[in-house]
Length: 394
Image (cartoon, rainbow, N blue to C red):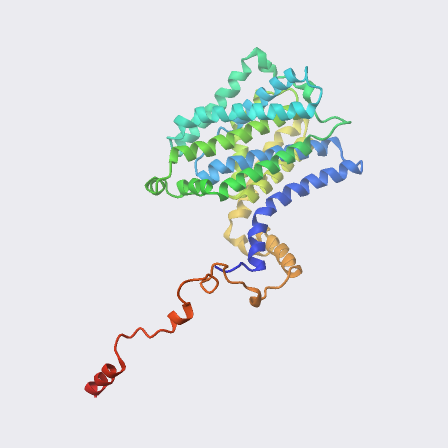
């Protein structure tokens, strides 16, 4: 076994570090503006929205992209996290003065409860496939938000007030920091899960479920694992949303928002974590820009423009005529150029530096001299017999 070259090692690391780099760039941009006094309230809220959109898109990609199951109930798990997190946040704020500690505790509670519901719903519904699973998860999302709508303890139709646990204000615009920190933790968990033997089992189920069963993979277990992990992070994103805005209204968690999260996954690429991060960022920016620019009578144009932007992105992503342009100026080409820059700065590959495996035969002491064994004549014929055989052949 030979040691990998510098370039091969670099390619392997860069593939998984680029996702962290994108999130850190967004976080660094917000911190730079905050420390220089140029961070506006609107931009801080945009960064927070980008952060929990990344969490939602990447977590849904685990189910849709890597597991291969179509789920339209992601907004329902976010709804559970938002209402439960906001409810317990209001209670804990009476006893705990630190908003950060309240946020951390409610993220654990909201995410855990969302994962419990993910297990309850996933156990029977994951036996379904395709459109049937999509209908069941869509119905789950609608049922959940209507249950919270009719509960007076959660504010009823007016929504749950979370004013006491709000982060973003003129003196405190730090929620985006926590949001991106959670996004980094989620990337660490999901990327290591996908690269592990459990992740390979999940992708094997996506590729061929019958073959996966034949190889001894517990299909039900791994489907539930992917569903529970995705539900947990959707619940955490919901808790962040409860600290982001007030009141928490059931209207936000409609099936339209589940489809919007699914659009982020599809535009970024099924099973592509980097694409989900970029798509979530772009769609969040488009939504935020349209909401801030179009108000009053022009608000009705927001969905029209949003739909046109999505159609343009889909055409750009799939049109064969644009393939040469994408190959030259696309994200993959840009990524390759960046890697080439770092490759030039790194040490060039030298074949003479290649080291053999430490367990090579010439380094392990044995009872038989390997050189003597390799040079031994294994022909059983004696020299006289061999000479006689040569005369007969003549």
